[in-house]
Length: 124
Image 1: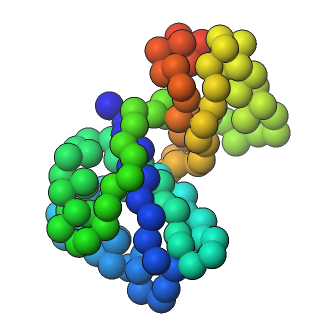
Image 2 (image 1 turned 45 degrees about the horizontal axis):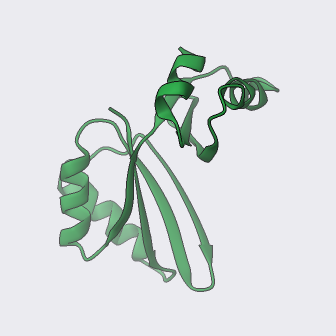
C-alpha cells in the first residue's frame, strides 16, 4: 500500500537534510516527495510504498512529528500534455475530491482523495 506521510518542520538550513538522513539511516526509500515553505514552516509530503511504520518511527525518533498518514493512489502515467487533467477528471466524475497531488519517481502521479475506493475504481 502506498502511504503519504505529512510532516511540518522549521524552515531552516539543514532541516531537510536531517529528515532525509533519519529516513535513510532507517533504510526507508522515498518513492516521491513534495515540500513547500511558508512563514517559517515547511510542509512536507513523503511517499513510502513499503513500510510506513518504519518511516514514522524514524521520523519520530528524529523529533519530526507525523501530522497525517493516509493511503494514496499512485498511477503510472505518460509524460504528455493533458495527462493530469484526464486523470483528475476521471476521479472527479466519481464525486471523489482530490485533496493532494504530486509527482513521484518514474513519472507517476500521487493522488490523495477523500474516497480512495471510488478513485481507484475510476482509474483501475
